[in-house]
Length: 70
Image (cartoon, rainbow, N blue to C red; front, top):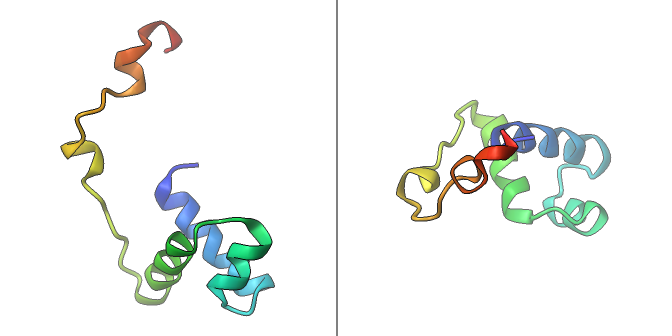
């Protein structure tokens, strides 16, 4: 599950089982509260946040490190 999918899943579960409370979901499910809050904001506004971490990261991708895996 990638970041966008995870941030779509976590707020649905938070809304369903934790009464829209990110801190409660963090305690119950051991998820990062910041991710839950971002997912809730994305769900509320309909705007998907896109990060540029992989673009500006100096770390090599897994496919580059271990080409035999793919």
